[in-house]
Image (cartoon, rainbow, N blue to C red; front, side):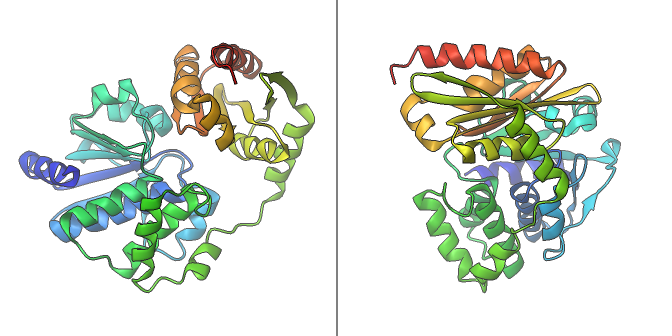
Length: 332
């Protein structure tokens, strides 16, 4: 039982000060899983001093959730006074931006809890890596921890886990049968599904709308094996822009951008593309792309990201080369 391994590790190391870290621009799955996990640990060992931090802060949507959940995020954690580090929904330390070097230099044992494919470089740093791609979200993994320990949910814990699952499954479009069973139980703890889902609704601001429109205007379309691949670039909101291109009709969308010498690439695909080609964006495209551009890449089968250093145009060309080779090896 994975949660028991974590508890044994905490007890063996006599850890009291634990820092939970979420990826940059932390989404609802990241902060909600961190909150529920910290709450669970505190119910087992009340003496633990657990802090949560997100590199570059939470996303705009996550900030809205902070109005409804008692989640407090540290802006600048003290890495020198930590007994244990835990990465949640973060499979590469590159997703921590400037904090990555602090994690590397830290003597505190590192635990990784994520539903993305584990990254080899992160596995080398971690004393324990719990990576379960079958889980719909990191919140679903934390839900399993509660069940393994037979700990009943408080309303706040149930609501946090519900919101994280809802977000990462696109309001349950990508949910599996286990997810629905979990959600059914969580709703029994006084959660109003309609009200909770409304918390995940956020009007798109002007800059994001412009980024999406620019990505559409700059889009280049390639076609191979009857699959439509869309490439574009914008300086911000790459993930949103990639989702928009999928909505316009692309089977795969890759959007790159540069800001302050940092390269970021967001990749999205339709479920049909993955099911028929078995090309996993996180493992097959983002990971080698991240390594090529001196960074890290990873993610889900249909949603992935890359952080590195380089030119956006060169990144798109390299991505096309990798994807084209993968597609040529398939007959569909």
